[in-house]
Length: 172
Image (cartoon, rainbow, N blue to C red):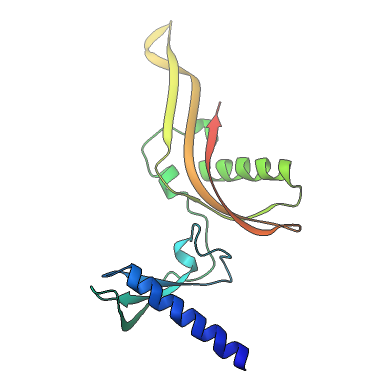
């Protein structure tokens, strides 16, 4: 009982310190079910809610629940939203990129399980080609690549969960 009260007091004091460091902002409550390190990348779904902070860095007492809170999901919107040809990735570019990331991780740790992947920024695309000699209006693609900044959660037997940031290079 005393240990639980001490832990609660510690969390409360950290909340007050965080408020003082963020005047006019908020202090997020991170769900440890989904994120082990609240100081790293935190997907939106792992935020339970936030306490609002006034302009002088004091908690207002108002708490806003996050309607998105829940199990983090893949988000490949920034990959597939741009109007760029991704035919070289097949019918489902998101699946192709996720599969490439998973294969790369499993090559390093055989039992790696990817929990979620989020593309953080619009990827950089590079497509090269040459004009077809028979028809100058047709371009034959000879090279295609993308670089997609991402965050992901991976779980292994030996290391537990890790949240990784990286850039997925894809090329053909």
